Length: 246
Image 1: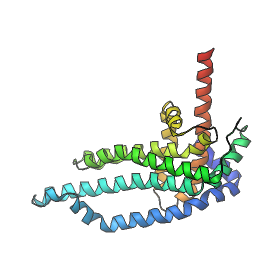
Image 2: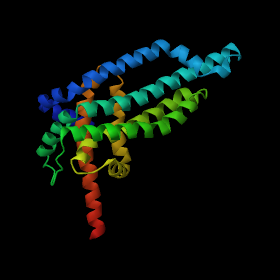
Image 3: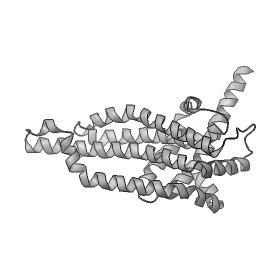
């Protein structure tokens, strides 16, 4: 779906440009925050591990490296989701226009719900905050687990990436669900049925967004991929419901 989104935008560069505009500002903010984190990572790792002050040099270094890796992984995960939510909120009118054009080409949305740009912005910000808070329920325990030698440096970053990918996919499919009058709760219920499909969209999007400046292009591509994922998930749900009714 991510690759199909890229193909659609390459055939319609105007949509690619429109989708890139909101990502420019959030990319600059993200890079600034990550740069500041890199500069202060040693001090932060020391600050969160006061219990290691009296340990031997070897163990102290090991624990603080683990803390630094965990801090950076958690920051990437939270910043990625937060910046995505902000990008989608700021770019609500752009992304609604893109979703409408893409879905019109694919057959349209019967009984689509018309929403003003302000309402879409408000819903995007509200749901983005909810998803960030939900992601903290996973990232905080994983951050603590990051202090475990070996496990914290190799397993925790992978789990962090999967958590970020899942919540990012929920963000990316938001507008297609809004256009059908479905709130965040319904979105989560439908996406759980196709969790691997959601991760197939979220993993490449989240990893590529972590590369400086690439997010400017990745975001609109991932958004269009999200439109395609939402359509398939909802079609499967409707087909399953029709089968049960029959």
